[in-house]
Image (cartoon, rainbow, N blue to C red; front, side):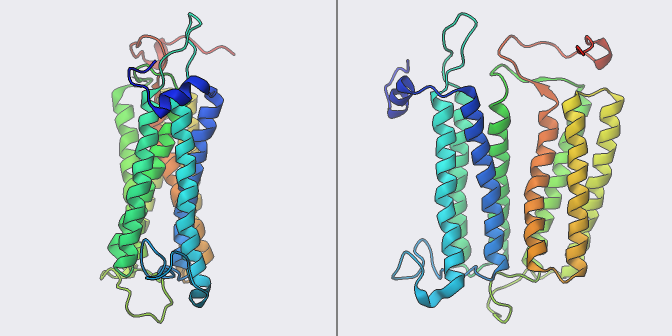
Length: 335
């Protein structure tokens, strides 16, 4: 029992969700973090970025959009309301992690999983900070740099949500690498390059064709860098990401990395190739809104795919840590 009784500890005495429910709650938070990325993009692509003219209210006099604001006001306000759905999903994940008890070998219950709860609270504070950044974006008239920060912050939320979901499937012991350290470092390089790819995409957005308001609106500033040059830099990073992903697949095969890691590397390559094809098609078709929206969904899925690679190169159990052994010294897996 906790030394200090709190509403959370009182709830935990009466409700002990299963491990499966904790995983479902963490997955729901992850899904909603991707949804908020896509709907945020929809706000910009429908030119509804200033559908609500201020923040936190929709207008100076009203919390909700007025009939005069029309379609754009509804789109922007709906995206704001989805933040509450996201918050509910994160809240469910926090409560499930806080109240879950992992059974021990002696038949008793282990203390609540503090690491999972901390990741849940990290998501909560990221949601709150991103809401504030979104408000600043509106108050600054869709400044492209704050728009980029808004997207990067949303991707940080996706990162933490993924970590919680993956941790919900692991034990609470210390993480032990399942491959040699240089292989783990290679996976970190892969994450860094793909992260730069996503960040470059946000800059392309800031200089591109969809400022978030009707095209005849000249008030919204754009990043003062040639759009074609930014797009080329973005494409160069895409080529580098694909090449590195191919190299990782061959390296993982050579060192006999865990099957899960090899599968995730192949999944990443598939997502990168699909995302690359989509990016080239949208560039040469004058970036239609639907393709840009799909590209944003692809960016979130690419980010998830690359983050899952290093997470598959470790083992975390509830027992004592075990030393890493090379693949050729391990016992063969049972058929």
